[in-house]
Image (cartoon, rainbow, N blue to C red; front, side, top):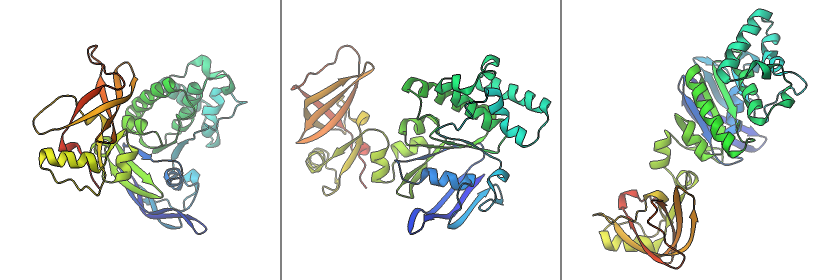
Length: 334
């Protein structure tokens, strides 16, 4: 559906994106994930047509759109700032694109009410100015304005970053529901790892203008292909020479002591099973979260974090010792 072929994007001598190759399937929810300045928004803008690659090509289906004007690409865009017209009503905002296309009044009215029902915008809200709406409601209007034009592709650039935490979670569910209902190919830009893991069919992890890994959320999280991906996605423990040497000694493994080992904090266990190494640590800090408690332990002169699901019976205090058990297959080295 969408293909980046050897795409380079540069600003003078600065190369923002180098040799980008991606193939995004029809109907897929595909996320560009990475820290600020890594090139994810730049890549999205090249697809929409806001900038032209210095090298390579961008395809939508079989059509080369690299130099096609924005308005001829049939791509909907929702910005971080929503970019709504504050003095217009919600109805007028949603209708704007259809009016530009000179659609009939009846067609506009019918389509707006269809889309509003899907996105849960009420008839009362349609009559209000967008300045009267909350952030979450404005987000819905921005989505409706993009979807009403029936684009082949929907591009979303950090669309939830201006919302508070609870509303952001609620809107994630709405976005996923809407994307499934419409079956529209969606490209989503975010720096939020949890958002990417929750929403995506596949994820491309960007780092300094390169794509480090493309995969499903499960592959990105559990089968990280680089140290950057491993460290950027989720919470991770870094195992240094001392811990790795102890694991090698107990299990006769051969982890490279010159390299850092990585293990997800939820993979460290308090349950002793065959094939696991025992690491004893002293509690330095703990965070009670309700569902779980996160312990920070000093183990072999290194810091290891451990998550314990709260069962009402297990609680260690600062200064106490506890045993952790680590399975070698959960340790990653690069």
